Image 1 (cartoon, each protein chain N blue to C red):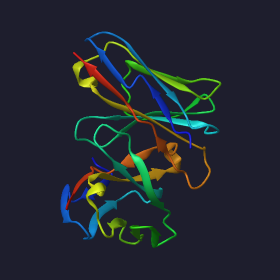
Image 2: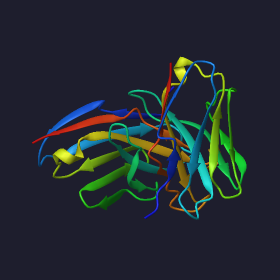
Image 3: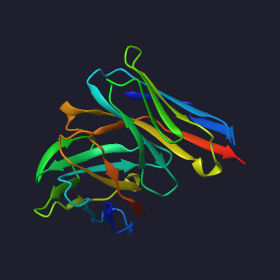
Image 4: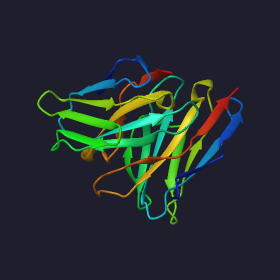
Length: 113
Length: 114
């Protein structure tokens, strides 16, 4: 059973548009929520992360919105560029599980020029 | 900045053979994690180590074992390889128990079992 559910599975956006990827979780013991970007054959690269005591965090064109009561969080990529085309994974950490990360299923983002 | 180093980057083995994957964490990082990623799938946690002790265990087959050494590097030993073990294996490192709990991933080892 997937503990972190991610949607959509794939997303196509025009250059300059906004890409939005959503994740939901059930385990209230999760205490840290990172987003990773992965290009084919490469390792996941940490993009941005948030703690549940914060509702929003912005770094450059990337913003995480976090809704603790709904147990949902999302990644917004502003002014999307073709170079952003990659697979994006949300993840969650549980301290009592030794800090392992549990990943969502991933979203394949394509930004058309 | 120094990143996580993994070797080898590519490995081809036959069924029933053994394989050893190595991971060198970011300098000063004391915790190492191993993840397995199948084609088109999300990374799945295998095992982690802090200060040479196993800190957590996930869906790691009994045929696999791992350890962390005094210099903090880690090795994942895989025996009796099966076709289904073909995957990308990632190592990640972090500082134990310290916010912001960031885990940095290496470039991975692509294991192909024929």
